[in-house]
Image 1 (cartoon, rainbow, N blue to C red):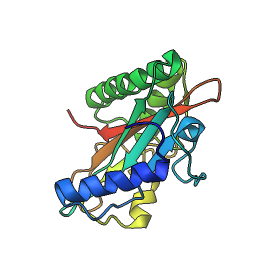
Image 2 (cartoon, helix red, strand yellow):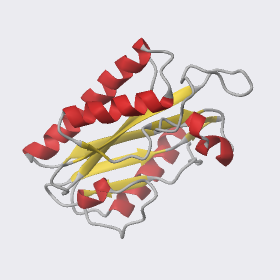
Image 3 (tube, rainbow, N blue to C red):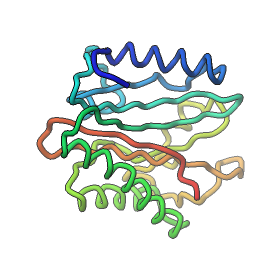
Amino acid sequence: MSASLTEEAISEAIFALALNTFGTRRHWHRRVVRSGPNTRLPFNALPPDRMVESDDIVSIDLGPVFGEWEADIGRTYVLGKDAAKLKLCSDLELLFLTCREHYLACPDITGAEFYAHVVGACAARGWGFGGAHAGHLVGRFPIATSERNAARNRIRPDNHVPMSAPNIDGSPRTWILEIHLLDPTGAFGGFFEDLLIA
């Protein structure tokens, strides 16, 4: 990834790479490429396209469909050597790993309890948390919108169901953990997401 490209140009390049390398044509959510101050924005925001700069931070959120299954992955990259951006980028993966360890050690934790843990872990390292939730289910494509948005299927304060509980049909649930950090100065943020598996 380099500067002098727009967020949209990077998104289009990712789409072409996914198609040419993996044959991926379907994405269950829009590709999100954010840079600089746009990295603070929630998923639903639609900021104007922005040119990536030489000392920028860039977050990518992808939702490809492989066969019949949804995937969801988010990463953040730093161009240049800005110490605060590099620390945030490093802390994203560290926080993902430590929060995943907590989840695996507490199989009956509820979505609300885990959300509180994630937000607290981010605050303990000096970051704000930018998400209304800290993750969701993924599974066979497509998941009905009503199911995707149901509290029991999100890591958020109103989910009082154990995350280990099965789906309504009795099948196991597969979770994605999302970490969206906000720099306390308000200048930038970063995003990391992946499967909550051992």
